[in-house]
Each structure stands twice: as structure tokens, then as C-alpha cells.
Length: 140
Length: 140
Image (cartoon, rainbow over all chains, first blue to last red):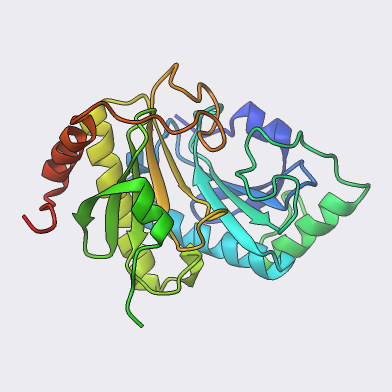
């Protein structure tokens, strides 16, 4: 059975591209630079449901996108989380946090509603992050 | 410089014991069976600040405690997260979630206030989880 991205993740994000294990997405929310890593493995809900080699790759890719995000945004803190309360398909949030951002000292979920990016701003951030991750835009 | 557990984590948890990298803690919150894994490495805030071997060990220990928690509680879902918005010392939450629990379909942070365990219940859960993780109580 072939893997397809969950429609809610498709709807809520812009695709940066594919690392060896995971697809990298940028959330449609200007409140925080917010990446999501989705292992392209059909039917996986939990990290512990992945094969051991895939868990190793997952940690490597979390590391890669965390560094790209921190270096690219100069954020104060990273939040890394696999929750899956709303969308069951395994996905890992990697969020750049800044002091005084829309969630303040709290976790981001259930706080500020998603804020649209200004025209071109999401694409510009996506391009900068793709360059750091050596990802090519699909179809480019 | 030697590692010490952050005082807020000390205050909010019961200690299960030490895996090779991390100390395993059980939150003082009966709303959810909630483990916290704290790598015993001084001054580390982010997962990407760990050495590569420690990141590998972290993924192995997240896997171990996730399995112990899922098998020991028969929960519906796991939440795994390294946030650090309140306590900067790197720590990973591994939370057993149930349909209809105190946070419902949401993330647990900033939802229900911590609920005390009934007398003996936290110690009983701790003992069951220690057995699954082959951990000895400190001083025992």
C-alpha cells in the first residue's frame, strides 16, 4: 500500500520537499516558523511503530530540520513534538519559538488561531529553508 | 560540571530510575500516565545540542519508555514532545492519552490542572513501569 500525505496536512502546509525518510512541510501559520516532518510510511501512527532503522533516520531528519530552522530563523527555542491528537498519520512538529510570540511561554496548540503569511513571505521562508536542507521544489 | 535535575522537574514528579542516558520521572498528575525523560547531560537545552551518540540513545530510550507506557496502560495514543517553554533543561514528555481524557482531542499543556493521585496509586503505577523498564528504585 503506497503512502499518501494526510489531506489535513496537505491543506494546512506548503511542501518543502522530501528527505530520505520524511516529507518536510511548512505550516500555513505566520505566528511561528513551523515545520512538520512526515515519514513516508503507510499506516504508521506512533514513533514506536516505525522500524528501528526508520527511527534512526527520523532522529537524523529531526536534527537536520531543527538545525535548518534554528539557523534560518535565529529563534530562541525549538519545540519538537509527535502528538497526533487530531491527525493520526505520524508527523513530527518542529517549531521555532521566540520570546513574546503568539503563544508566549506556552505550547502553541490551542492558542492563537493560524495567521496568514503576507504575500510572498511563506514562499521566501520556504526557499531559504529548502536551500539549507538541499531540497528542490517539486516539479522544479 | 555535574548534572542535577531541574528543581521544578524534581518537585512535579516521582523518580522511576535511570536508564543509561536519561532519568525517568512520573508526573504528579493523575489526569494522564505521564513520563518525562531527562538526559543526564549538564547544560543541554535542545535535542540538537546533544552529541550524536546521545541523540541515538535518546531515541532508544524514548522507544523503551513509550513501549513500557503503552503496554502498561493500554492507552489509545502516545504524545512525545520536547518543548522546554517553562523549564529549559532538556526533557522529553511521553504521555499516555485516552479518548475522553482531561484534554480530550487537544494537547495536554495548559488544559486541566494537575490532579493528585489517590493514595498509593502513583506508587503502584511507578512500580509497574519500573518492572517493565528493569529499573530499581533508588536506595532499594
